Length: 141
Ligand SMILES: Nc1nc2c([nH]c(=O)n2[C@H]2C[C@H](O)[C@@H](COP(=O)(O)OP(=O)(O)OP(=O)(O)O)O2)c(=O)[nH]1
Ligand SMILES: [Mg+2]
Image (tube, rainbow, N blue to C red):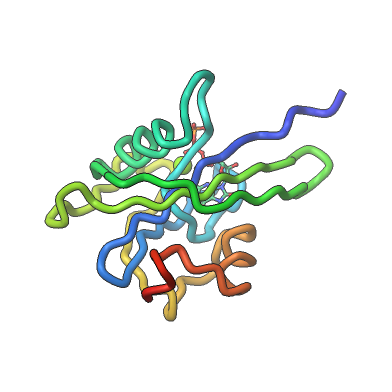
């Protein structure tokens, strides 16, 4: 039997005109690519709860105004079917700085504006952003 699709939550944390990216380490899918903070939806969680939990676990940041933006549905191989749920959020306190709390999974967190995307970018995310997807409210940035 085929494995079930996995559900990943990824969070665009917006600060001024920037978004937080981290380079993934080797052990996960998308190894060595830049991606958003996020992780797998746990049983019983809302998307917003999962986003807040994963961001806290991975970066130490507290976020607010968490909203659903869009979803993607990608069959990446004959074993990996990934449903990604993209959320947007803002820092609860704009003075907070990200910490690399899971250094076995991520090389570190860096703010980038979308005109200067870090490369290589995790596949599903790159396709979205290259396609013109804008996570900022009202296309403001
Ligand atoms: N973190 C993150 N995951 C993403 C992005 N785009 C995307 O499709 N995903 C998918 C890939 C993974 O299959 C899934 C979960 O993310 P993850 O690989 O960071 O999971 P994790 O180890 O932090 O989470 P967990 O299993 O400990 O709960 O979400 C993205 O930009 N960032
Ligand atoms: Mg993660």
